[in-house]
Image 1 (cartoon, one colour):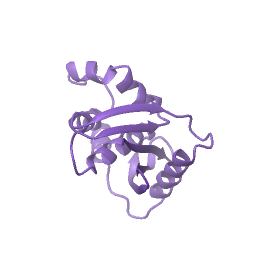
Image 2 (tube, rainbow, N blue to C red; image 1 turned 90 degrees about the vertical axis):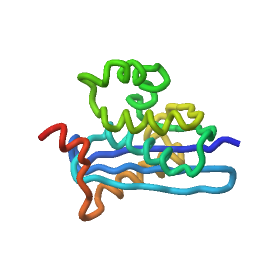
Image 3 (cartoon, rainbow, N blue to C red; image 1 turned 120 degrees about the vertical axis):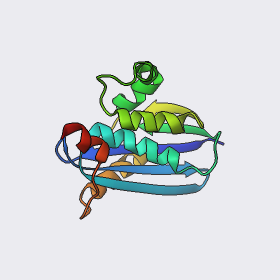
Length: 152
């Protein structure tokens, strides 16, 4: 049985306060995760959601289906762009910190990516969006150091 992971990211303003939401399903079990940052971008939160989801797994070598409405994330992996970016040291690419973090955890599992249309009534995607937006409104959000260091 495969683990299903649904992810979404949100930013109020781009950049602005942002959050990510995750719904993980394995058989009849479901777990939700979310978090936010005081200043970040939508793309960072989309990718952060995938990183956090995969990092939360307690075993390696799992078969994981990731569902995301982010073409940025899904295409980067499915079309192999991220592997080319890695070969050039992510020069002139955005979010190198998160892509490196992603690749470290991605390689510990058998991950397949699936694009879903956002805001189209997909229940798990809609729930991820709710979690992401709610997280962006939490008080006292931490600093997204990877983002703020790159723009300061």
